[in-house]
Image (cartoon, rainbow, N blue to C red; front, side):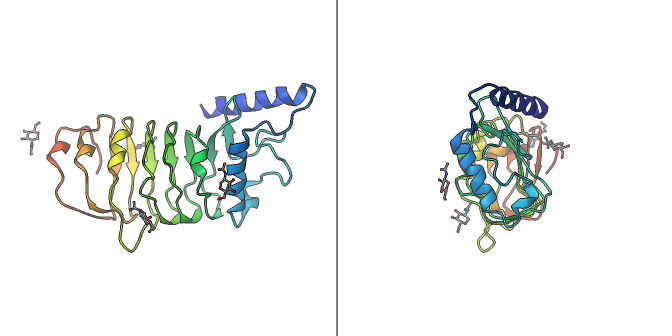
Length: 223
Ligand SMILES: *[C@@H]1O[C@H](CO)[C@@H](O)[C@H](O)[C@H]1NC(C)=O
Ligand SMILES: *[C@@H]1O[C@H](CO)[C@@H](O)[C@H](O)[C@H]1NC(C)=O
Ligand SMILES: *[C@@H]1O[C@H](CO)[C@@H](O)[C@H](O)[C@H]1NC(C)=O
Ligand SMILES: *[C@@H]1O[C@H](CO)[C@@H](O)[C@H](O)[C@H]1NC(C)=O
């Protein structure tokens, strides 16, 4: 999947690059704008090794950590464990074709932007960062979501934050991991009746109330 995307991205870009008249800046301008905001929000953007002057993520040279589709839309950002410091752009969800984002194990801080409406997003790893808040509409419209990791972020430390009910619309969700991230309150009943959900991790929070009867007979393998 990742390799195919990469290959296509490279192929399309090379074809355009070779055919006269030369067309620069073929990446979707809106996506490019969000990537530039992402870079500008970092204290150490050099770690991405994106070219200083290159104005096109699909090159040449193609930017590392970013992958796109054959319509030059960004589909993946893979920048885990690079030691990135800084904040994320609040309009990250304008990358509307994003299907896989890996930003875990960095030192990203400030507000986590909403992922609202990222209907192609399947995998999102945001764990082990230093975000201090999560917006209440973060989970809205994540129709294709399969895996989400938010562990070890100090979200909404003062009041904690409640489990979002809109997550029940993510019908293909198989794994979520929200350990030690200030979740508070009770677990919603729908979790027990989500057919695809097999792994959930919730330790290190202040969850209360009873485990609902609907969990009986569900396919959950881990709590
Ligand atoms: C994202 O937000 C920044 C400022 O907050 C703005 O300058 C930029 O134009 C926005 N980009 C898109 C694609 O909406
Ligand atoms: C977390 O805190 C922010 C800022 O105070 C607030 O806007 C947001 O709704 C809170 N998140 C949740 C999930 O309640
Ligand atoms: C889902 O969780 C299980 C158990 O922790 C793990 O083995 C598996 O790799 C996870 N899948 C993904 C795609 O992260
Ligand atoms: C849970 O399911 C088992 C077998 O399916 C049943 O025997 C038991 O009574 C159920 N418990 C509750 C609390 O519904």
